Image (cartoon, rainbow, N blue to C red):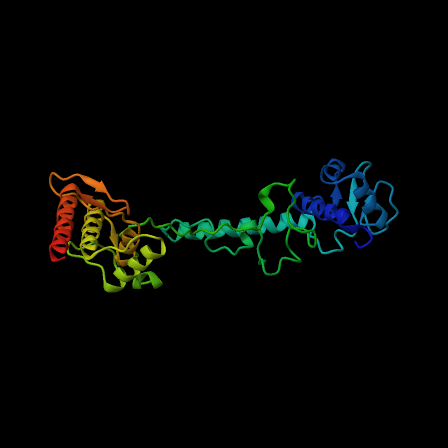
Length: 300
């Protein structure tokens, strides 16, 4: 194998998987060899003695038809023959038929699953074998690796898990109620938001700090009250449920934009500094400033 190099050894392994699957007893059809590999790779396997062609002189290997090849020492390497594999499959089928007959005779009403009372090896049609020791009595060729891309999926030993974990959507109220649900049984229950819910001091402090970090002004107590009432109303209208509401409220308060509402009949007028005030408030402020100037003048 070291003299054959990686490419030729790869061809040897892929074709070995084909030979084991189709029970050719080591014979390699010529079209299969050229489908899986190139002419230089085949020549390398022949040169180092891993394969034989028609007219070879190896006394331990059988004759080869023209155009085909043979894997050197296929049987001596521990690979089962076609007759052995078919015999094992027949024994396994007979054993399964007896088990089913016994179940029918006992009046059992249970529907056996596909894999009941069978080992993982017997699922492939073998008895007296396990996947832990497949080297001697498996119809996969020993030392030839997994099934190649050119083969069917029938020889794969991979098993698909028969269970899956469902995904829970946000706001889902269901929780596993069985005693064997493990850690999920200890999770807090979800509930609707109370009408009188209010954020904690830590929630308010965190939201105010986040607003400062993002360049927003902190909220006044009145604005915090407005934000909280809007938050509770929105969560109630949407039918949201949660185990705790502080985190959602903080995110809501961090992103909330508060606009001062104008008085009845007033018009919002922006100041140069960016704040807003009604026209009536501006007029009252102007009168107050005028009075101050008059008082200063009379004092002088």
